[in-house]
Length: 223
Ligand code: DX5
Ligand code: ZN
Image (cartoon, rainbow, N blue to C red; front, top):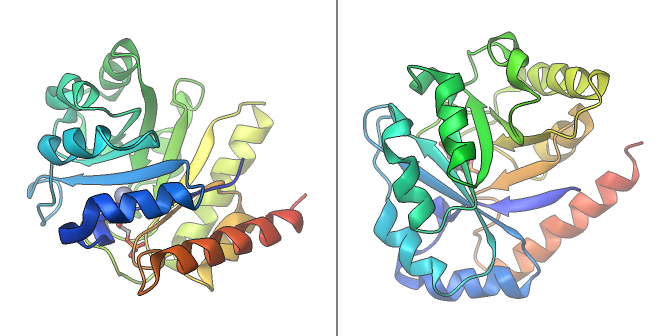
């Protein structure tokens, strides 16, 4: 139930295929793929052609995080190029309920994400309609930022709501996860852990092994 989701935003794009193989060999199941449009967030990352080409080489679950304004425009494209789940930002959608329906109708898993300043309350009515809630723990847009402590409470709040309703909605966290913050987010109730700069260090295989081991150890201390 706890899974590491390495974010390829921190990959060495000159060696992307090779690095994805390493992740797969280390037993990584979920690949976190950050798409940025230069409008919803200040930066631009990559889009469909990159996903399409890595799809040919990988069986991992492609978890596509759209940091894109009006993402409903692109759902079909991302599904066609190989997304297994599509996460949209609540703040980026004109009609969030409709967008969720469209993703569901396209046959992939549905995630909804909230930025650090967006309260859990804004999405709490649709916890039973999505597979995953992504709590951003930095401002979306760049890797390598510092974890925002004020987000911990939001993870706890979500965990309480999900458990109280008896749902199996997953809680993903993204941004500033490292050796210190990993236990904070897991203890608060997150189970899908995105790691960019923490995972893609000098020796990728070793670093991923180390994080997976830590996740397992911490999970044993959580009831
Ligand atoms: C940031 C992206 C993240 C990013 C995280 O907007 O959504 O997925 O890769 O990077 P780290 O783990 O370095 O904070
Ligand atoms: Zn992300």
